[in-house]
Amino acid sequence: MKRSGLCSESFQVRTFEVNDLYRVMTINFECLPENYSSYFYRDLYTRYPETFVVAESDNDIQGYIMCRIERGFSKLRTFTPTRLLHVVSLAVREPYRRKGIAKKIMLEAMKKGLEKYQTNECYLEVRVGNIPALKLYESLGFTKTKRNYGYYMDGEDAWVMAKSLTNEEALKDS
Ligand code: ACO
Ligand code: ZN
Image (tube, rainbow, N blue to C red; front, side, top):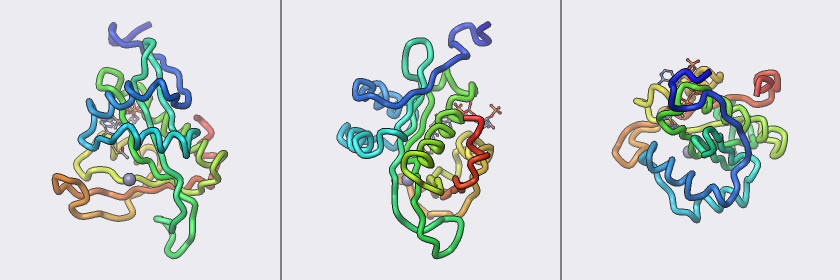
């Protein structure tokens, strides 16, 4: 039974397809001040298709996550070379929030990052004032590892948050 009356509670998760591009760009414009060219989305999709994930509900895409695979140093352990899953952007349309969509697509991207690209750590930047996103990442076991002062165009700081992916148990409920 529907709780809100308007939006379905159920959703399906699948990997992004090129035909989804316009819809994903629209959701990004609606939800975030950080916007990108269509080339940027296509490039991430071409290079890392498995970790570009969308959620469908009511016959349309309502949320997305896109990531980049990087070689770098662990955010959690000093001087430890690591393959990193970098969450570049994540958003869920407003009427479809608090239904578990973001959590599910985060878990799916982390599972794919581990299985398909052998990444052993996930990280991201988030505005220090973005309470919903901070709560989401904390609920998934991310920890704040660094504050990047003036990271965003408008001067707001970012928290860098990271989570180890080597404990597969943590990704089991995805
Ligand atoms: N207040 C408090 N806790 C919250 C909130 C909130 N508004 N939203 C999510 N959470 C926490 C809760 O613990 C929640 O579990 P619960 O509902 O059982 O309490 C848990 O996160 C999972 O929530 P979901 O339903 O999976 O999250 P949702 O699908 O609503 O999406 C998101 C969360 C992506 C942050 C959404 O609010 C959004 O699109 N915001 C605008 C765009 C944005 O901020 N994107 C992230 C930017 S950072 C980046 O892209 C790397
Ligand atoms: Zn980033």
